[in-house]
Amino acid sequence: MTIIGNTALKVAPDEAPRDKRVNVFQGSFEVSNDPSVFFATILGSCVAVCMRDPVAGVGGMNHFLVPGDQREDTANLSYGVHSMELLINGLLKKGARRHRLEAKLFGGAKVIAGVIDVGNSNSKFAREFLKKENIPCLGESLGGNSARRVHFWPVSGRVRQLFVTIDAAPPVKTTAPPKPADDGNDIEFF
Image (cartoon, rainbow, N blue to C red; front, side, top):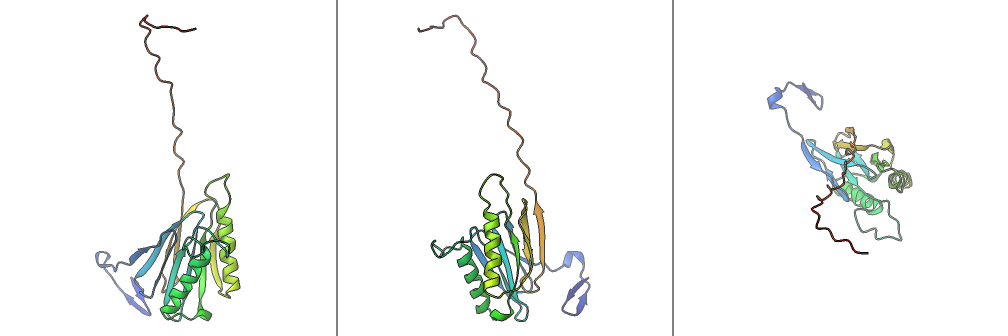
């Protein structure tokens, strides 16, 4: 049974409506007001912000790699500062109102031990940005050491998250090359 609005519809499994998947890649963002669209991304240390205006029925998702600040080239979608501004402006162009925006945060994991914790920096930036812009954060799943697959339905605000385990490759066994056969013709230099 499928519920659309306040109406319950019985749909045969082979006739079930299919949602339209839109992939959000690193350094990009997407915005939609189509109720059949969902955004999909995979995150490690990157952060995705899922933001929407529930009254206007429009939402969007970004996927940024590093926080960025005024000293850096922030006109690149890989930087959180630029990515957040473009996401908000995209929502406003589709009819959202800034005072009604709400967000959910995902990602920011430390997936590789022994390297700089970019995920923590991304998470901190996203929280501070929302606080500074007075955009409430309704929920977050940040940090840890597992990658995440995130699906976001921008009109309803529904989010589905799956932790992705990355199996380590088995150790490669190396052996020394076989020793050449001694044919008695070797020359030895002193």
